Length: 347
Ligand code: OKP
Ligand code: ZN
Image 1 (cartoon, rainbow, N blue to C red):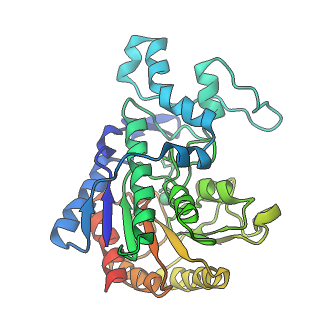
Image 2 (cartoon, rainbow, N blue to C red):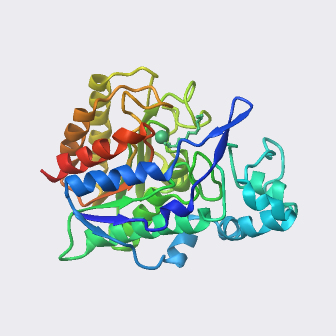
């Protein structure tokens, strides 16, 4: 297995996120990835690599160019407002909801920040753009690796910030660039006519779903906390099946908060049946381990040992597989849980 790790991830070290009217320390921290690296030292299930330069053309086929241009310059614009801003994370505070214009890009920075985001829990700072780009490069390189004739059948994009909440032109849920979607697109362009993205993070992969909603060549399946009570709330219901060419190529399997490992695993089997029926030539697994019983922001109850079994089950698809690192906030256990999936897969 090849493991592409993002050397720039720690450039994104957000200080705080908005929670119940207060700024609190951010759950999504560099320590998460450090724990995975440490566990990989103890259990070397793969070979570590740094990614090559990012394919910007591919990036622009997944995300809207005006969104990418905004992200690239956001920090500069933020400091230009006031030099003292350098000490503060950027957080949006105004959004164009139903009936507002999305086609006119405002000149005002705060307004553009709202146009391109959906929550106030995704701090942006000086290094965020570089960190997100490094992760995108990992995802694309991982996809290309599994398609290489002499390559491994499985690769892991070990990165943060995560990606599955980032849409064609919006950030949120700690995500800026959608690594899983970029991997899927790279697999498509690398010759796979059909690709599946299976999202097993606790939270619905709203960004990935939105990116591929009108496409029939990429199946998106997500297994997650019911959006009636769980973040990201406004997407991820069972009746979202895709539209146009994409009709039938989206499957949501929402589960109530409190779901145990047995029910979760049974639902994973359902997800895998849908993937098999689609007959893809490769699969991307958006791997969040915030389904863990000790996760501070999630409410499923998988134990560390369950992740070995999850890896084994995913290997049963028998497909070239790209894993992208998504959530998991029980920081000290993230390494064991992630590497358990990889080890279970590799066995
Ligand atoms: C990202 B990924 C906690 C509020 C929830 C957003 C959670 C994003 C999860 N104070 N904030 O899917 O793991
Ligand atoms: Zn999550």
